[in-house]
Length: 391
Image 1 (cartoon, rainbow, N blue to C red):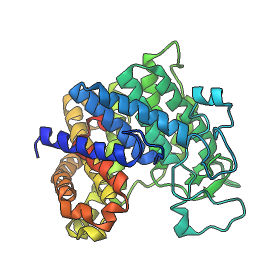
Image 2: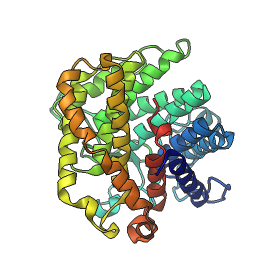
Image 3: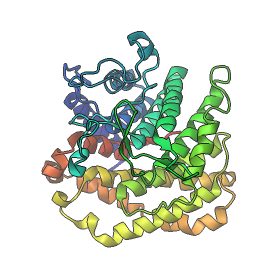
Image 4: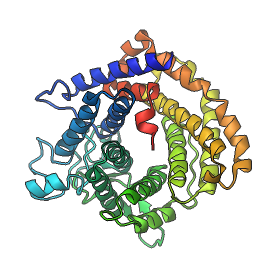
């Protein structure tokens, strides 16, 4: 599929998403979900920059506002009301991310003292750190496209809140860890285990925001989030990045592009981190390729997880070009070259994944329809990744 056809298909998918979730035409019942909405904001911004059509920019800004006024506030079925930060209506509108943002799950969060049902917990509300980092990225992209520093300030406020509430010292330990899932108001952990790539996501996001702040020296401190970056470096040390989850592999490759983009915009060079990420991603790609997953029927597959890998491969293609054009982005270009070449050998997997999920029959299965919004948005991102991948 050529670039024009891919963009057209992505625009059609995003039109469906807008109608399904009450974004456009405006509906009385909104369906906001933080992960999906973060990718959607970036998609609309990318369409605007590609076509010049201001309607796409307006959709992105409307979606940001809906997310803040829906997921930044307590649910309709919650006895608590107002902003989850506890701020007044007026102050909450000025600082909509100060209390974090809800996931947007179907079921309300597990109440204090209620026993955990591990299966049902996936459908319960709360806050996820890796969803918050996706929203930081979306807000940073919105600030870049619009030139409005408020979006970047909201992203920084979200980073301060997330780091303060999700990190902790386990009893008897001097090394911090992170909770996987927190309550809506961030006062108690709901799942104590740590997401494998959450610290990396936080490290990359904080650095990205710090570099973006260089544009506003009078409004945002130059070394904003310095303490948080130091904090999360300590959590990252010694962690294994290896995964055979397609979505996780894609996330690693996207984070690698962002690490290089930070270096290219005056931030620090993290060659050793790139080396670690490349090795983990390559190991994961080998396992996915050997598993037969991408040859299975649609009913056994989760589209959004595979499309995460596809997006990551698009990111890696850009990254490899960046490194070739500007070797200063890494101090270890020669040692990274074998891994770069090996990962580039998997680029056809992106076309394979997109082609599979573009087939109408595969998008009529229950596994697609059960996750229709996230699947559609991430397919759109894979087809037209500029909005999400442009730093």
